Image (cartoon, rainbow, N blue to C red):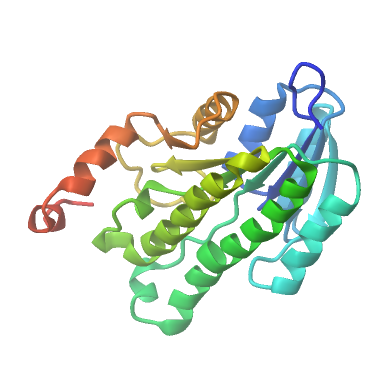
Length: 253
């Protein structure tokens, strides 16, 4: 639970190896010793390394197994988090799958894999976490969406469609939870230079995870419902959303 001056004391990251999420944890806590952090992710060297890096900053880190393709796994993980350790201040939904975009619109299994991770599991986890935070009467959910969901384009429309659904769910969830004292912040980054995008050509306005983290933390503290990273992306997407389809289809995006 937050301390007397509003500092978060306990953070849970679903998708605990996310570069954006880990940068946000560091920014949000300002390396205050004793903050409890739970990293929920598949067992891996990446998870262990992430835990070690946060512990080196003085945080108390717990690792738990979390698999977005397995309902039993994520239900068990969320139940475990809220059953021990006291109240949770912030839950970050930071898991996702980019996939092979050309394969995804031509292969049923590839398409459904994206739907399962980016939409179905994200919605299910949102429902489960929301119930727990409502019972607490306080807390915040940070949902990492994407500008790809604002107007899906030819180059990644399957991924974009899953993010559009996820974004809509968490936007509505924020409205539903407002009277219960629970904040939901939907984050819409553009291209971010992370492990997930390694090997891809960086798009204009691309950012590092630490830059996205600054936007997230500022939005959370200001009580915002939605943020774009970088902030200028809001206006870029506003223009793109309103372009006529024949014009939009000719853009090199």
